[in-house]
Image (cartoon, rainbow, N blue to C red; front, side, top):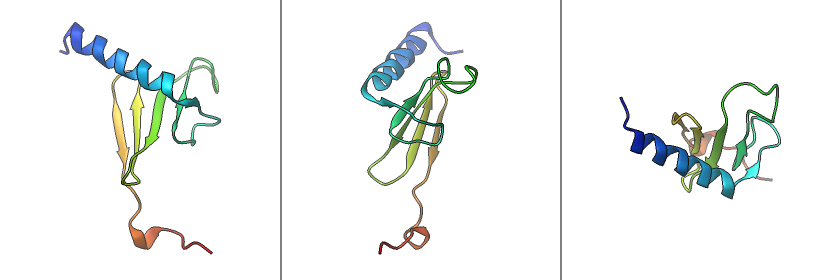
Length: 81
């Protein structure tokens, strides 16, 4: 079971990240914060979505969960015109 201190630090880190990001326009947006209490149907989990230097996308949820979507392989990228 996580300690109170680790839960408090996680909440602090999440709120700090939240304060530095713009609100998401929709749930598929990146480099933003989705506030589930005020967006969509008002249910679900709030999360911060950030793009990393390597192109991967990190989704950090208010409850401490974290997901990483790997950057697409160079062959998967759409060529620019």
